[in-house]
Image: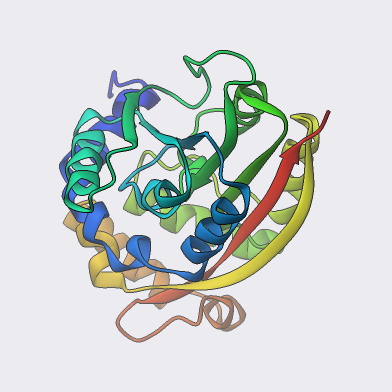
Length: 256
């Protein structure tokens, strides 16, 4: 039995993959990054927090329009990769800081904008993380939350969470649209706009990024082989195991 905490498990999973997440096409590109850039261009925030920054792509999108961007993550190796890539891109206003989403080391109302992209499904307590984001955000400040979302259909949801956990044991949960709305309301965010998108995941690179063990890859392929037709249709499952999932980009502000 492992004695790891969830935070150490996340760090163990993602630290060796830091460089891969900086260069990963599915993370480094996308209309959601353009949406972040346009929102920050309009707001011109003095201080931005990128919670669970991963490979830093939300930070890179925001930095040209912000005074300072704090790229915040559990993994020191991920932060080192973000710092190096920020320097390569000549973005000196990106500052790195290590820590967990559920306990931000920042004063109340410190930020003009808060971002998180493809990270919240790894948080131990997404409600606590969103409450911390709201606490650290100025009243009326902008927030953009982007993540993979779970389908409302309970059967599809079960298959999805199982696939995610087999690939990455630090996975906690992909939340549904309704769950996101509930957590945001409880944290005192007011939702301004919601943009749904679909994201295709190439199976070979999806498992390679986190060095998924061969036994778990076999289990994933076995699941795919027995997947009911209606569930395979939702995932647009391809012969090589590649599949397509739902994401949400949620624009919100801190309710006064």
